[in-house]
Length: 330
Image 1 (cartoon, one colour):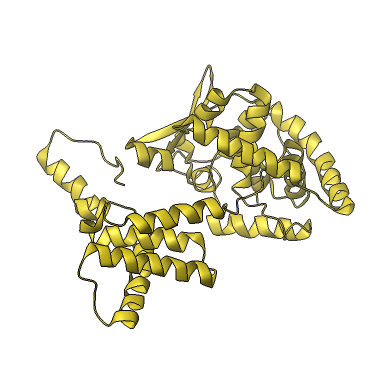
Image 2 (tube, rainbow, N blue to C red; image 1 turned 135 degrees about the vertical axis):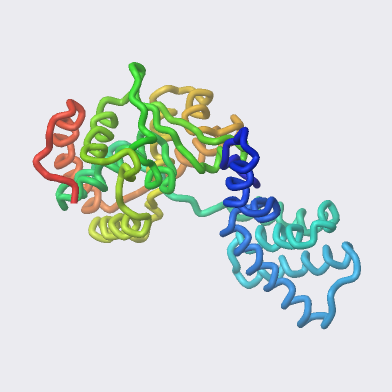
C-alpha cells in the first residue's frame, strides 16, 4: 500500500521534485522488499505451471485450479505459510485481472491459516526484562540495556526502536512524545507518523541518557539492526535460551501484555499499541498470556536470570532518578 511520504508544496517545481524522488505511482503500490518477494514466488509458481502444462493457463478458472493445486504442493512439502500468502498475492499483483477470480485458492489459504498458527515470539515478563537488562549491564553494554527498556515500555517494533532519531523526541509537561515514522500502522492508514507518549520515570531517564551528546539528526539508540540482533543472540546463548523464541519483538509483545495487566483495559492497550481493531488487541493479548503461562525454564536458567535481575535493580534505581551512571555507552 502507498504511504504518505511527502507533503504537498504550493510550488509546482517543488512538487515535481518530491514526486520524482518517490518514483512512479505504480512503484509505490507496495514496498520494495514486498515486490521482491512477489517476484520470487510468482516465478516459482510460473515454473511449476510450465513444468506441468508447458503453457500458460487461458482463463481465470484454470489459474485458480492450478494455484489451488500448487498450494497443496507447498503444504505437502512443508513450506512456510508465507509462501502460500505471497504466491496468491503475487499472482494478483502481476495479473490484476485475476482479482476476485481465485475463490478456491483463497479458501485453501484461509484453511491453512486456521490449521497452522504462526510461530510467534515469546513475550517478556517484567522480571525477564530486568534479567536481560542486568545481563547487558554486566557486559557493560548499557546501550542494549537502555534499548530494551525503551522498546518494552514504548511497545516499539525493532525497526521503530532503531530508526528513532534524537529529533523524534519531544519533551512536554505531560511526558515524552516519540514521533514514529514509516510504521506499519502509518502505512495502512496513509498518515505521516504515529506517536507514543512515555510517562514512566525509568524510561524517561533512559531516553535522557540515550540522547546525551547526540545531535538532532543522530539515531537515538545508535546501533544497526544487525548489531542489535547479534548482541541479542549472544545474550540468548549465554543464558541458554537459544531453543526458545525470545526475539527482539518479544519486547513489544511483553510490553503490551504487561500494560494490559497493569490497566486491565483493552481500549487503552489498543490505543498504546497503535492497533485499529479491538479484535486484534484481544487476540494478541490472549495469545501472549497463554505463551507466558506455558513457559517453563530449567531451575538453573531461572536462577541465572534472577541473579542478573538483581544486578539490574541498583542501576534501574539510578536511571529512574536521572542520575549519572559510571559506565558510558559502548
